[in-house]
Image (cartoon, rainbow, N blue to C red; front, top):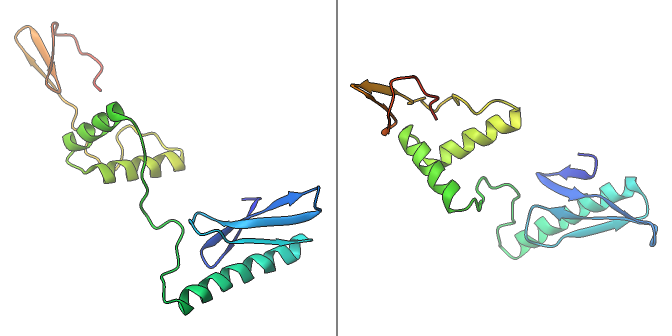
Length: 149
């Protein structure tokens, strides 16, 4: 992260205003607005750390819980069709939607394939009876193998 600093689990952005000849930033990933600025990069880090320390001291003084970035939950809007598909996919594999999404994110961020995701049992199956083939409950009219979902 070339444009971010980290201190005490908080992240600060780094920006430069050529008009004002000043470096500035704010604490990211929390709702509170905590900003800082300085004329050089070295002192900008000190300003960021001071801003975080001041915020934590103010929270303690007022007996309020400081906001923490990345608390481990977030809302994702995926649309009803994708939501339904994901919920059914998870249910068919005996996992909950949170575990499915967590596994998918971990694999995506590692650059791994999502096929046969670890921790999720691959429950694809094909049953052949007489002249119909049933794949995950959907009938097909021939006996040839088809690609499973």
